[in-house]
Length: 197
Image 1 (cartoon, rainbow, N blue to C red):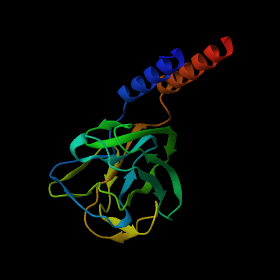
Image 2 (cartoon, one colour; image 1 turned 45 degrees about the horizontal axis):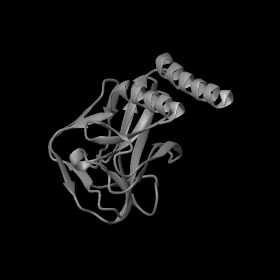
Image 3 (cartoon, rainbow, N blue to C red; image 1 turned 180 degrees about the vertical axis):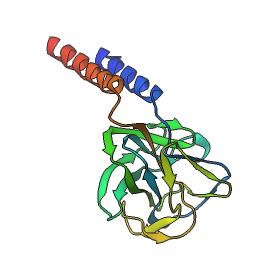
Image 4 (cartoon, one colour; image 1 turned 120 degrees about the vertical axis):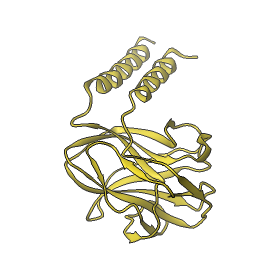
């Protein structure tokens, strides 16, 4: 295995070990097959600035997603602020029952937002809640039941069931210096190795 691949892999593993809390956790999750194309999500409010570090999609069985899913955070006017595509399989890392994909740290000011996850008519189930949802400290949950039919990631606005497919990881305030240093060191090491060759 090439040294640059080892360095990059080590940086990614260390980054996932530094995973922050999820926006919410839940008990009594129920998964149901649904092959329609639509975006499901939930509304949340932050009491102070947070930095979103990863977006994720529920992975029933924790054994990999059957297809990739776009996940994003919108402001209340429907503007997409940050998004990623959580890859199929086990390429993303797990945090509880969500398959996560790291993103460049994205600062959300105190305020209200909507997170959505696109279901592309795949075999991955839509997730409902029969128990309770608990927000992370500093997060207040609004409606847990917004959706919108359509292809791709779209602003979910219609009330429905309690949808918990998308989720996010965060840290409070500005990006952690350790995370930024780790990413910078990995990039510098790869550049040095390539230059040396």
